[in-house]
Amino acid sequence: MTATAATADYPTVTAADYVFGCMASNGQTRVALERCSCSFDVVASLISYDRYVEASTFLSMGQVTGEKGVLFKTSAESKAAIGDLRRAQAEAEIRCFE
Image (cartoon, rainbow, N blue to C red; front, top):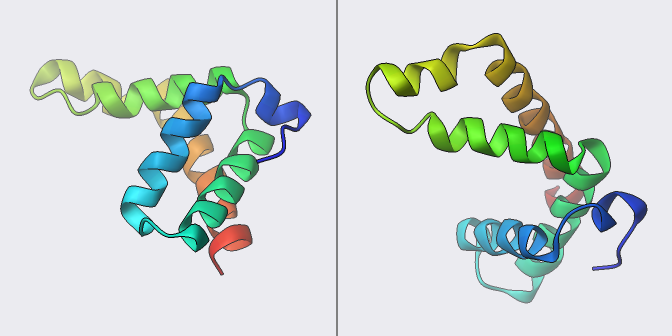
């Protein structure tokens, strides 16, 4: 993966975690590695690292059961951040997996 200005803002561990998770869902093959690396590059080019962390945190905290979890799923801020991440992931899907 070649670092671009966008991906350079992301810590290496975040890039590796994204690609590892993507490969867990798409197969442990060389082709999956290339597509998942591409996917990370696209996501990183579309949303800032801070926005990525924000959306990831909302998604993680939204797994909490009960009233506490609802706050992380239903706020306008969480919906906007998660929406930004989902749109970036959808664009990555189009560019890298089709």
